[in-house]
Picture 1 (tube, rainbow, N blue to C red):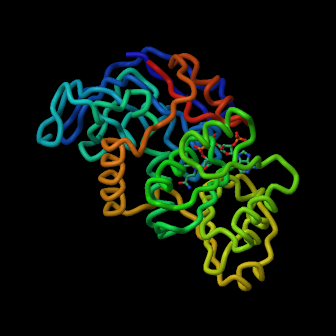
Picture 2: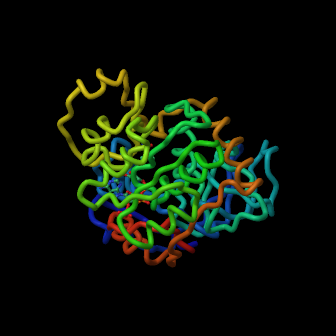
Length: 320
Ligand code: NAP
């Protein structure tokens, strides 16, 4: 089979398309024929060798894929060959024509969800779900600001928060992004590159502030975020690429809080709940993954460059 293989950490050019043996499922494993693999920002940090999780070399990147069960090992009860699934992590890596996964890493992909969309489920929607439900404990009637709503996590969070009954504000940096965020359900959209846009957001709340901020770029926004919060507001730090100075008094005045998480650290109970929630949302149409770009597997390096560039519009997926 063809797979992307990384032999050394480095720039996007270390992603090499190679011919490798197709793996065989051992007991408790399944082999998935991959139709699409999702590209996430953390894939680029891992490839660069700067991420907290460093895989042993060589490795094939990718946790998010969608495809069809090709073969199953002994003891598998949940799926059968021919079943459509999405993956939440894999054993051998998603940037390939086939991947081994543990039985608990594959989940049913509803008929109405395409393989491209299925590759956009796990990290983006799992993060949005954990951020809104477990971290923020969001409830209907609250105001959420999805700070960076045009990308994978942001567009997922907009759809989910809207379906939960929150008032949804979203930000983006391009015309295409504004349109996408509005289309996915945001009540109001703001330009995170425009001077004074935070004042516009504050005004839009009638001077009350927002209850929740899902933050995609904390090293840029965290200090200003605190000033946008209502009493008991909370900032959920999802994305961060550096350091920032904050004034804790901004939290004290509002009895507010900031929390962070990584999806890697959630419990198996939380993960079980997340998949049940996501599958229900995919089935009932409230969750509709947005695929902005499909690229051939051979163009993984291009995908890794583009995912870090401004102008997000949903997900980038690789098609083997
Ligand atoms: P993505 O698809 O590349 O989207 C990036 C988003 O950030 C876009 O909406 C982009 O908007 C926005 N952005 C750019 N400049 C911004 C600014 N000044 N203020 C606010 N937003 C800005 O990435 P993603 O998959 O959604 O992930 C978003 C971040 O969360 C990444 O840093 C990722 O590593 C992190 N993440 C963390 C977890 C976790 O477990 N904690 C899980 C998933 C993702 P425009 O392009 O329209 O300007």
